Image (cartoon, rainbow, N blue to C red; front, side, top):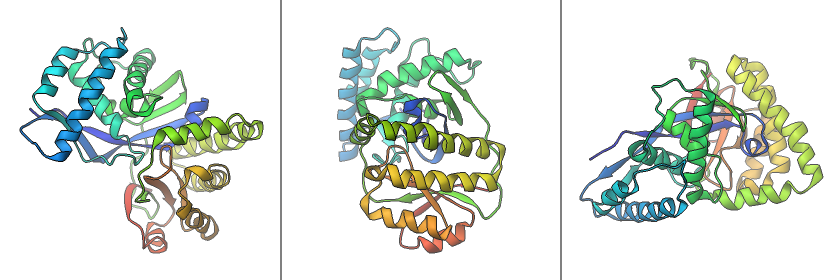
Length: 308
């Protein structure tokens, strides 16, 4: 048995801000994907995934939530038949590895499941997000439910606020010089400790003010520019956002990348921002000239996400 594919996701804008009810924009990233599979594979990866699924099953059973209506007996039978999640999505990289797994489990075992084929009203989206939030909390301690939602629908999602999200169209890619790319930090990040740092910082009035006045404002402007295809304005706002993140989110940026981040701001060859919660994994990059950025970052592994 091999199930349908579920893709990685990239939160282009909105990391941390969506916790505080500002805008976010998430897009599917089809370079990485995973699917549930039942096979005789006895390799380490299959075993590890099967054990994780067993623990996830126990969590879902104990959760005993009426909204999370899954055929758990069937799931348990499949786990006993060596089901595992066959995935190329890197873990701890901020591109939604657990989100894709949650989406796959919901798709396979949910009763009365909401499907992509029906009219996706706001209420249905919020219901899905709520179910996914409860399911994915097993992996992160606290989850917005957005990663599994993005992976499940395989559509760009615009987050206007916690209770207002919608599938959205993004401008078609162009064959221009500009690009969004991923920079591999080669460090595995963990979501939970990073979110804890953020929540502690939120106790500080100055930090809260910065989030409301600067971080949320530049994030919202970046999203508006991106969706309108206003590339000139977008890069101005991405630079401002990158500056704010370097100044106020230093613990979420691996130490070895502080200088590189600053160099981008000074040279204008590229601007960096967090991809997900930070602490490692991928760092998102924006550039008006991808060849120039590749040359400036020649010692690092880059992956192209989107062309302007």
